[in-house]
Image (cartoon, rainbow, N blue to C red; front, side, top):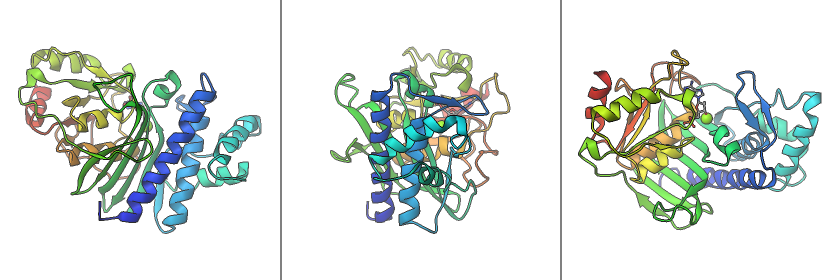
Length: 326
Ligand code: AMP
Ligand code: MG
């Protein structure tokens, strides 16, 4: 990975540290302290800690870059949440010694939530519900220049390294650089290997991956599509952008995210797809919305020009788009 060498190194370092923090918290707290945000989605002390570590490192090394990240410290600064803030600071201290609660909040708030010519999109924990359940989650970081994703990193601390050994070694890092392919590493950044999507040509042999959460996509529609295409393998339900990782390494063929009828006008967030989509594409896959439009990373936090997501091994993309339109 010769291009963007500093960006690649720093982003990998940030993702490794953030995933170590998240795993430490997951091991220490059986259910994790969580706050409910205004949209009622849970946010844990690990979300805050991960964002603090990554934003601090990015700002130090790339002072001119904008960061667009999911969390802010508003809730954390409330006097009745002081115990939670103390816990966040305690965990961050293991990585950044002597950091005060106030500093931790200021690092979380380095996020500007604005699209600029060059910015980092960060989901400090994608799949918080999976994290709280002890299932999959990801730390997702992407560098976007002029609306195009140049670099994507996904840390999946709880994902098996090899499907042949689902109960074996866990913790994967996926890294993709525009035009340079995708790789998988272990959770320490070692054992790098190039990954590529599956070569499945016959739709009936495809495997679908989709969200665990029933409200995040139209699972009934996914099932109908599977029936229409004679797909017999059960779908792999998985939280977070780990879905893009298993697509990129050829374990599944399709990632379907048809908008849920529970929230018809829902627009996807940039940080939920920027890193994952480049990892799938650089591994030979294709990623569009469910109407075949390219993903738009230039309009703001919300991908207002897109509806849902279809990621595939590329070969089957048009077939699936046609079947979705039926
Ligand atoms: P997943 O684990 O793939 O279901 O994705 C988790 C992400 O789903 C979270 O980061 C949320 O931003 C996003 N999300 C929340 N509500 C919805 C919804 N109604 N439709 C699609 N995605 C959603
Ligand atoms: Mg997310």
